Length: 241
Ligand code: IPE
Ligand code: IPE
Ligand code: MG
Image 1: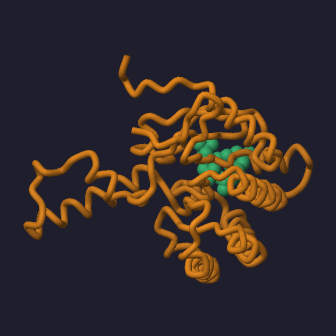
Image 2: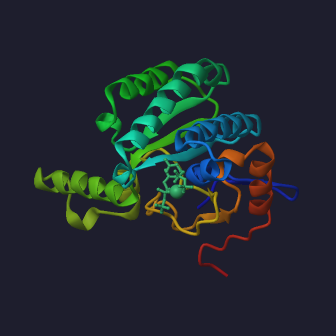
């Protein structure tokens, strides 16, 4: 079921997913604007991508903006996408040089036009890279993901291409944004919140969870290694034994 690479010495997850939470609280604690918190969060992301590549991780998925985050103020949303564009423009050459392949989970066509352009450019530039698969969940919601998958399958039934009885779990998995991505072995959430907040609902059926009180901007290479060490000690049963 899992392709995480295990031997007697170590067990590396194949796919790590991260709920990058706590930018706002980090900013409040420092007495700086929220924008500065999101910006510091991007620096933490840079470290995580770099370290994940160095460790030979195959898939890293980060939750950058949820379908519910549109409830935030226009000012904050604008700031988040500004930082995203800045990150894409400033980091993309290094990301590319590190053989990282950028992919988006979520309908990002609705984000500001210049952010769509920056994202498209990154996807195009890195499309043939063979190292770390770096998935950014952008305007992503687990329920929206499943709803879209259901619509796709329903359309195939309407066209007579599919019979309802032929819908398997695998077919559902293949109809999601993560069609080509294995389920996450490990889901990390920072900032002390103990919930999924609509992240990878279908895909997390047998994921291991790692929660830390550290706020996302404080998360660094050492934090990632600590999470991976915790994963190494887990015993996964998948309902067996
Ligand atoms: C996570 O940090 C970033 C996004 C949701 C875009 P928050 O902004 O949620 O930080 P807190 O939870 O308010 O501290
Ligand atoms: C989850 O964090 C979404 C991202 C990290 C992008 P939120 O801060 O939006 O989650 P809730 O609202 O506390 O559940
Ligand atoms: Mg939050």
